[in-house]
Image 1 (cartoon, rainbow, N blue to C red):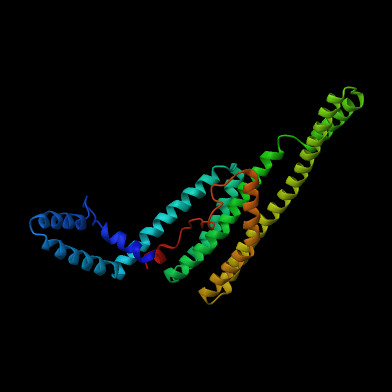
Image 2: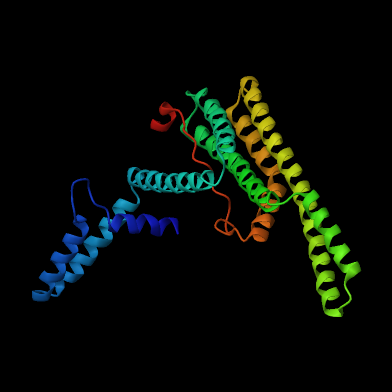
Length: 277
């Protein structure tokens, strides 16, 4: 698909300031001229193939296409990040922003690295804090489920229904009250499970924060940028189980907007010098 992407971009290439790609103009001209002299269609086809071959093999053109795609992906990741942040309360939004700023500060402290090394590190850290963001969103979803009522209120309701059940004489009423007890028992179990999940999420959030600090401290000691990149990748690999767990929670909550495909990296700011290399 990569080669055909370059071909598509070459076919529709439009210099800045032009409303219509010049390739379209040329093709249109040969189509019209070929109505009078069909042999010109063969000439036009040859010129078109030569033009596409020349442009798609140009290293400069390929870099332009790659940078355009990267910009588009960055904009998409940023849009998704903002949409997820909007679902958090201000405290959690600030917590995420602080971690994002720490990651960006690590990149800013390495302005002399090659652009490829910086981008590799930025992508690794971006995926790491995306998992962090999804954990925050998942935690908020679980909190909404269990914050409507406390365990004490459910226990109180269980006592009330049991009292009604003891006094009930009608078989139909006794069945209805028995069903209510089953539902209340399930709700109580759901709340207990939710509290356990919240504890797990809090532990994972703290683990990611500590991992970022460990990477930052290791950056000072590392002499090879590849070492830091591998460390970031290793940390990301340890979160594979967490990512799978998050997906399971999304399925439970019916939250499927990003279940498919790999998680996108949060777009991080890279040093200006590296971005221009």
